[in-house]
Image (tube, rainbow, N blue to C red; front, side, top):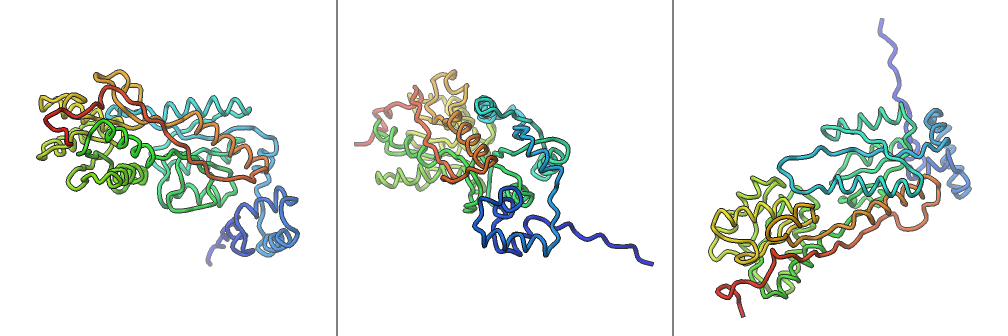
Amino acid sequence: MGGRREQRAVTLGDVAAEAGVSLQTVSNAINAPHRLAPATLARTLAAIEALGYKPNRAARSLRNQRSRLIGVKVEPARADHADLLHDQFLHALSVSAAERGYHLILCSAADEREELAVYDELLRTTAVEAFVLAATHRDDPRNAWLRERGVVFATFGRSWDGDDETIWVDVDGHAGTEAVVEHLVALGHRRIGYLGWGEDSDVGRDRRRGWLDACRAHGLPTRGLEAQSDDDFALGQAAAGRLLDRSPHPTAVVCSSDTLALACVRALAARGLSAGADVSVSGFDDSPSSALTTPGLTTVRQPLHEVARALVAHVDTALTGQQAGPRHTLLSPALVPRESTVAPPPTTKES
């Protein structure tokens, strides 16, 4: 005699598909019906009744008590990494959350599957109201998972696959590397190389396009003037070496991170060359080490406090049902010139 098969619980996504509306509309029909047009509300409620959808009353009760908790995953420190971007961002987010009366609840996970399991546990066992995500990428499963459950979230990093529903704040990497090239051109450089991440990095592609577009705008060569590496010091040093060993080598190297820039500085030293005096080098992220190295590293600073304030503001308006303006914020970075970028040596300077 066969056992009784349990039916799958009806989700917000099922209701949205049945009614032909967005997940946010279903959430509004349950939690803020006054925000919907009468016809939309009626259609959504009819779908809820037809499918027998049962909202999680316990979770709603917790949300209505306004715990003002925002969940954030903490990234582990890496010995092969110069950038402390996540640590700086986390501090900025904590300050910005406190300014609006929110608090962060931190969690850790080895990968995205484990991250979602941690989110599920937090939603079941705590009063967390929303999440802030980082390290976004195409087909990010976290977005769909949270939206399916009607959970408010915002991401540091744009939706790379064009998902207009996701609330995101990002920094314009294209503009950052473009500004570096403009700076180098003004110094007299004509052979400007690029040391960047692989094609699987959406952020890396964005920063590479800034270098490529700026070089093309000035009629500068790019063929044979780039190398790729993971964001790892040893691998970056090897990739920089391959770029520097080409003849003629670039008079300047634009790097997609401070880690790769410092790796390039080390590769130059191994060849008896100096950053700045022989080959100009620039990074990205303005990590603490960039100002302490010799020479000081020219880099691009991300406005992390602005990012954090915008993310918390987006979360707040979404939680209070006031989301009416743009759901996306793209911020401009700032060039930080230091001694690692100077005019090219007279023997290599082109007229």
